Structure formats: structure tokens, C-alpha cells
Image: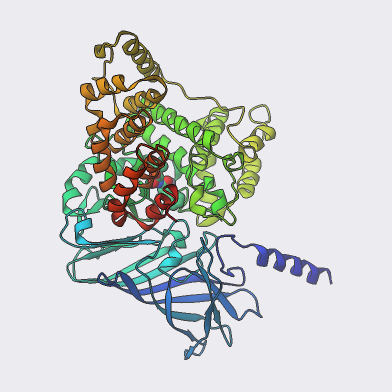
Length: 608
Ligand code: BES
Ligand code: ZN
């Protein structure tokens, strides 16, 4: 009797372990293996073909498979019985949900080991961007790519779209002959262009890491296991900019254990890519806006590489705990930067991050400043604030400082090894810390840890990073403002970091004449560095400095990275002088933006 009761309790616990951003019934049945066979049709802007799922049934009475889907057209569903015969299966859709798409319910007469779904995607698929040849970087051939995080894999593959389920996959992708397809998988055999490509991902990954891109791509090696895929215009520039990738891998490996994925390549996307980077396994997707010519923005590569341990190997089990991916990754990123580029640069990058976090904290609801945020009923992409990234990083830095690296480094390495290829939640991490780290309350008390983990805002034990370099910049800024003499600004030795700190102080302190003086002296409106340009445009808009507007227009027409574009449109929308201008500009720019950027800007300009 007691055993039955115990089993019942265990069963209920499993059944209830669901993800608020997935319809799938993964506790009853899951798909450890997936096979894709898709053709890319650039005229129709759709993928069509089938996905075949190998099924693991976890409960004897289960006869239904519930998958996630969004804007998919299902043509036919068939299942293969244990004896190998194929049967047609009935399917239906659940209600449409604004952020989550639709459940796809498939009924089985018995627990078949395999199901195959024939389908095609829609041109509006939220996880795909289809670019005409004019919208590619070379302007000769069309381009398409996927961006599945957080819950957009379901818009191009019907599957269990939750980070709590892992799978291996194989894929066959057919494309126009002159184009190359690449995936976040084994790409080594695929550099010959013939329009028919095969991939294999032998390591188990969550759905949000399935990734595909197709374009007029070339490959160039950087080391034996690293290289760049890009359209020709970017190839040599990217190889030069990211030439430290191999060293970054060695640094991360020395700290956190073997690199578990084989190769590490970079794919340079067109400038409309909505993110800075995306850590697709074996093949990070990268915005060209970090190719600044001086390696000043390569912390992004350190970041995406760091996800090979934090995120791809040990994965947040739900989007409410994104900090387990991004906070750990920012921490690891900064350690890599410190070793490859020196402690000074790493410190400046930390300090700039804290400034970004402080700006976000001013604007967010207190409940969204917790490390664990509740996005039930909301779009989990909204969790993409500085909180999981920077507050998460600062928490780990707090632990590092208290325990010392001699203790903290092996702790983190063991964490990655202990939970490799598993999903993680904050409670589980806390239990692991209790067991292996938190054994002396004089070093760190439980109360201190709980404050970081479960209280809003910055914890009382936060120690702000401070650099002399930025103090010098502040002093020069003061002197220049006092004297009006631009020569007070000794900028020759400034790095991008100094500039970003400097520009970050301006909105509060300068007037329009001073902005003009700076612009004439340093050509800031024309900056080729996307971070500097964005920071400058923000100040310009805050002060109605209209001379920056033509450059801003060019920038917004070219770049679709959400982090840059959305705050700029937001500021424009709040300024009566520019609102109409911004709406007109957006009409021109919108077709070139990714669906995710489009919906974010639509919201900001109140167009939906
Ligand atoms: N995994 C993220 C991108 C992401 C997060 C996509 C949440 C969808 C939802 C990626 O690793 C990332 O963090 N990119 C940052 C760059 C980084 C250096 C902070 C970005 O795109 O700005
Ligand atoms: Zn990240």
C-alpha cells in the first residue's frame, strides 16, 4: 500500500512538472531523437518536408502526444508501429495563444515508437527570417536563418519546445544549388555547394538550440577546430577580428574542463540579425555589428563560447530561470576576457555592465528584478533584460570574491561536469552549493545567498567595480565642461570602453552646444562602432541634437539588432518632435527587420 502511494506521489510530481511556455506533455512521452527532412523554398519563403520523432513513452496509459507549434500547416501525420507498419494518425490543434502558438495533439492507437509529421512553415514564422538578395550583405543571393530561443523552434518544427527536454537530431536540408546550408551541428562535410546537405547532432540538446542558416556562404578556418562561415564581404574581416577564438577556447577549457562539442565555428549573419549572438552549438550565430575593426567588441565571442558550458551543457530548465544560462555565461565571459585581454579591460567591461544594469533597474517592476522571474502568460523573450545577465554575473562574482578563486574555480568546474547535459533550476543549484561550497557561514552565510537569489534589486553585499581609468575620464569631462576647451579631453589612449563610459555620462551633464563641439571634434555621429554610435544617438535624442539624425536614419535602416534598435525607437516615440519622423522611417526599415524586432518595435510605436 505504501509503495503504491509513493509511486502515485512520484507519478503526480512528474506529471505536474510542466513548463508554462510549452503545451507539450513531455512528462508522459518525450522525443529523444528527431529527424528533419526539409526543403527551403525561397520563392514561397517556407520550409517544407517532414520531421520524424522517436518517442519514449513514460506512462502505460498514455496515447496522446502533445507538441508545440506556431503558424505551421500540418499536411499529414503517420505513426510507425513496433512491427514497422505505418498508420495514418489523427491530429488536431488547441486554441491559439498570443505568445505560445498552438498545441498540436496527435492520437495514437498504441504506443508507437515513431511518428512522422509532414508540414510546412509560414512566411511569417517567428523563428525564421527570409531575406531577399537585396537584404543580404552581398546583395547577390537570398539568405535565411533561424533564431529558436526562446520559444520559436515551434514556428519551424513541431516539437516539444521546452528547455526541459533534450534531443539528438539528424537533418537533410535541400536548398537552391548555389547556396550553402549550415546547422548548429556537424558541418565538416558540407562545404561543397550542391543544394543537398546532411547534418548530425550527436549530443543531446534542447529545442531552442536547433539552428539552420542558408545563404551564399564561404568558410575560412581560423585554427584546426575554429573557423568562420560568412558571406564574402565579411569573411576576411571576421577572421581577423575573431582571431583570438582558439585562445579563448583554451582559456575556458583550462578553467571549466574539456570543450564538449568538437568544433567551434562562427556564422556571420546579415545586420538584421536581432541579437548580438546566439550560442547555437558548434556554430555561434553572430551579428556583423561586432566587426568593429579593432577587436573592441569581441567579448561577444567570449560570451557565446562560454555558453558551451553554461547553457548548452547545463541548461536552464525554464525561461523563468534564464539567469542560470546568462548570468553564468557573463561570469565566464569576463573570466575569458581577463585572461585573453588582461584584467584592466575585464574590469572596464564589468563596470560598463553594472551601469547598464543600473539603468534597467530604474525602469523595471520590482518583481522583474529578481533572478527568478515569473513570465507566465507573458512572452518569455521579455526576460531578456540586464537582470539575469548582470545581476546573475555579480552574484557569482560575489561568491568568487568571498571564497577566492582557489575554491570557487574548481566548484564551478565540478558544477558543469556534475550536471552536464542536464537541465538546472535555482533550487537544485542551491542544494549543490550547500553540499559543495557553503560550509562556512563566516565566509558566506545562507542569508546572503538567499538575498541574491530571492530578493529584488541589487543585494546589500554587492560591491561596485571601480576603475581608475573611468575616474580619469570623469575628471577630464569635468575639466572640459569647466573650461570649454576640447583639449582637456586626452582621448588618444581611450578605448571603446572609455568612450562608452564618457558618452554614458553626457545626457545628465551637457547641452546641445557642447554636443556639437564633441561631434565636430570626434565625429561621434559617424562612429563605425555600433555600440558607440548607439550610445551617442541616445544622448543626441535626449538633447534634441538634430545633426545626428541623418546618421541615425542610416543606422536604423541598416541594423536590426534589437538591443540597439528598440531603445532608439522607444526614445523617438517619446519625443513629440520625432515621433512622426520615426514612424515614417520605420515603414521603410520594417521589411528588413526580423519578425522579433518587428513585433518589439510595433509595440514601442503602438502599431499593433
Ligand atoms: N542566448 C542569448 C540570446 C537570447 C537570449 C536570445 C534570450 C533569446 C532570448 C545570447 O547568448 C546573448 O546573450 N546575446 C547577447 C550578447 C551578449 C554579449 C550579452 C545579445 O544578443 O545582445
Ligand atoms: Zn547569452
